[in-house]
Amino acid sequence: MVISDPAKDLRTLLASRRGLIVAAGRDEARLTSMIRLVAGPLRLPIWSWTVAAGLAVSGGRGQPGTTDPAQALAFVSDSNQPGVYVFLDAKPLLDDPVAVRLARELGQRQVPGRTVILTGVGDQVPTDLQPDGVLFRPRPPDRAEIDEMLSRTLAGLQSSGMAIRLDPAQRAELVTSLAGLTLVDAERLVIEYTVSDGLLGAGDLQAIRRAKAELLAVDSPLELIATDVTMANVGGLDHLKAWLVERGRGFEPAARQFGLPMPRGVLLTGVPGTGKSLVAKAIAASWGMALVALDTGRIHGSLVGESEQRMRAALDAVEVMAPVVLWVDEIEKGFRAGGDNDGGVSSRVLGVLLNWLQERPDGIFVVATSNDVSALPPELTRRGRIDEVFFVDLPTPVERTAVVTAHLSARGWDPRAFDVAAVVASTEGYSGAELEAIVVGALYAAYAANSPLTTNFLLTEAHEMVPLSVLRAEDIDALRSWARGRAVRA
Picture 1 (cartoon, rainbow, N blue to C red):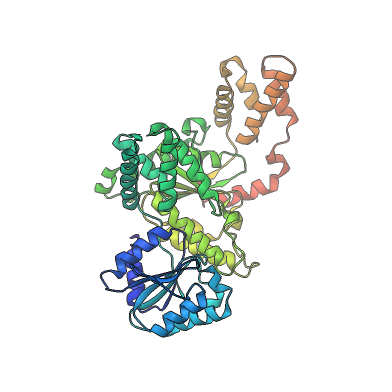
Picture 2 (cartoon, helix red, strand yellow):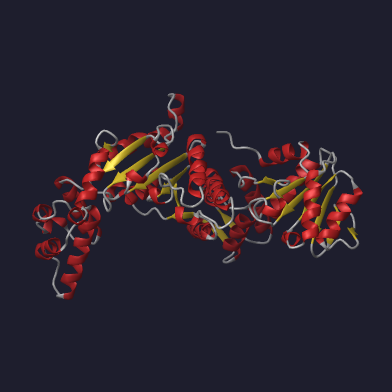
């Protein structure tokens, strides 16, 4: 898939004589720059409107009496002259029926070279302006734009006496860390973390990534996840691990010369608590990629078309973060088969996701996890959208040994001091999450008894716990029955 050039998209809209354009997003400076880039070669004058200053042509004085949006639109209509008329923060326009009517008429009356662009009215064409307005939703800045902004910003900071201590690899890492943000937000983060102590260095990169995660979390279904685990922290699942090692090499440049396509993704289904989410984190860490989670519960909006727009905006942001691992946890909850109880919103959002999965650019590896495959639309499991479907079953004795050993080691206890075999024998049918709970519960019991941790504490916890395989035996049998012939055992 070729990522489109936002300026080229805007040029196409202007050339197609669209009279009314709604510009989504909040990067005013980038949009204004784009308009200048496009309108200049076409010799179109650029007018801008704000509620404070009214309507003014670029390089000229304001037009008297045009602070009112209806008056400003009437001026545009009466002048009948070519030009790009940009209404910044135009939300007040929507509160005035006369202004709405004038805007619609400008969209209907095609005057060669005349286009009205509205900003700050949302990420979709407002209902009152449909069908006369067309949406322009520029993709987030690409790496070249971020790098250009970074060069300009760092030069300005250095001229102000700030110290910049980033080698080429660290600078490239900073560009990657800023991907997905608006240029305004990215520049603010760089300035903030430089001015705070007069220095921008390698130590600021992690803080900038955390700040970016917070920005993404505001009114967005995306969340940047810390990747502090590796495959060594995942007990068992040897077949899946070997497959991931093999696929991971597909990101090497030499793989393209060998004729290999880049890896696309994997669906992990199976029993709850068996480490599917842990694997998603370990993949990103092992491959040295960022991990971004898509929270399906935060996609849906209250307005018509808002959910699809939020989904597209999130996927656009993911594209500019590549290479990246996109994690969709419990995907069945957001994209259930036959979900028509919401007026078709879920079906439309699913359509956006399916199309993107098929056409997305290289460098994005999708890890989807599911505890209820029967609720998944079959289209999600089609090859081309993902590479493989793995079934993560309850751990075998060998895998339980690895899990118990890993959890004891992670908490500072030498597994050789315990009868791990006895614990494994007592935990047939226990999930990885339940094995962890046994270790943690035993630690609490030993600490409360002012005693060192012993095998007896572990066995007591194991005997007192009722595993999910007993509580939901029928559901787990159904999962296993589905997996036969449909999924590869992890």
